[in-house]
Length: 483
Image: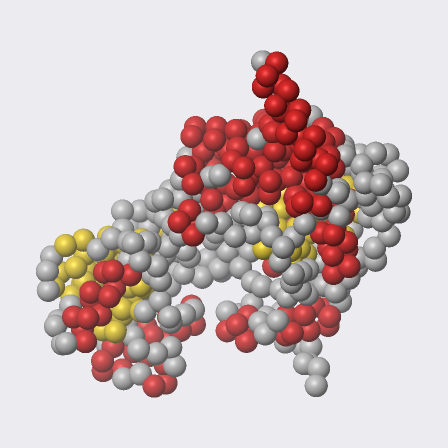
């Protein structure tokens, strides 16, 4: 190391650590003190910020292996690389295989036939299955209240669906069976030619007709033409296929004094248009860095730490669903979900009141890293914390925005490594590691698994019951709502 650079690094880390009032520093609180470790907060933060190992790891994985769509070489090779790097750190690692509905993307096309002939920039939704080509007039879908629609206006048509309308499998089936709809073009919500890769549903069921996402710009052009009665005709060609698949979750374990465990999770897979750098390469790198930091600075804690890289999240949370099915009897104290975590400015107790004082105390002791946003306490859907909460396990998510220009194409071609900010990645990894360490040594807080009744009320309080019922994912029909 050059002596001037070495002196600079020393000055930076000392200045940083003087500004940081880490959890437990200067205290003997039983809620944060491990019986086997002095508090490592300062070394965790300094190591993360100065060495930036998370950034180096992510750069290598993405550059060498690309996207991580399940069933592709990129997913397999990236998982192999991750496992090897964790094992090189001396971390205990194993894989857990699971079955799920899979999908193989084919050469799918949406082609505008009239009033001009050109391809539409489009993407097939996951679980759209191979069908014969469809060429038909386009009609605008004006409402998802299907009882108000005119069957004659939709019969034999491909529907153009504005981004403000949300459809599900039940509505697609009814549109096909009762209205004669033969395809759908789903407009994206963000301009700039964006395509948002996604699935038709989270159950692996083929929709009754082809579903294509198209850009907002193309959608608005087609809508304007339809509004003035210009005939619009589109041809849809679908070669993608549904097939059963086997994927693997990767689990890194830091054994504690107790088998009670903290689960830190992030989804490993990505969509295939870009590199999956932001979604969720960030989370993969953050979990890798937490494993590295804890293994180096606090390998033995009061509670076991399980760091789980969930596969096939983008297709319906399959990795976390299967993990919870296999581990629902494990003594899980809390789950932390890391999904597209950027600049951490707040944290969410997800409706578990017992977590509120724990997280408030944690934030208060972060010094210069203290959260600027008030603690939230309301659950939300759509990521890997959800299967855990369905089983009553407490969960935590971060409020951690990413600059809009970096994240706007998160399921599209521009989700690439150049968007990753090394300083942001290092800081978020450090805070995540501090939180995991705090929870893994907090033996005083009374964290508990909720009953089914309490869990149902948690979702009802968040106003999510109707949405879950409409999606066919409400497992609490036998539990009456409290007056």
